[in-house]
Length: 124
Image 1 (spheres, one colour):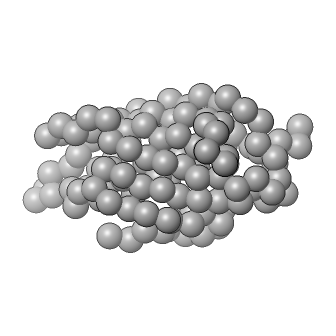
Image 2 (cartoon, helix red, strand yellow):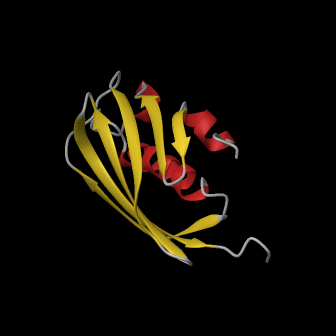
């Protein structure tokens, strides 16, 4: 399984670990990741979480695509901050699976992403 894609490369995301139902993706917040207030853009945080979500949900070998996601932002993140998105499987069904992704800065959760995927039939 590929553990990076062109969008991840564009954003500077680095895959640290992938195993069935789990993934860790890291990134350092750069000046181009900031919003008009000088803090990290929510879209960057979402992309970091989404990358970990995709890796964890596809690591079983069955193709999976997002059905729904939700993101909550708890703490401001600044340029230079080192972040890690920790994805863990909460429920694995035959056709759907749900994942919890915590974005952490130094062990502190700064944002939370929850997503559900649809697991495709590999023979289709």
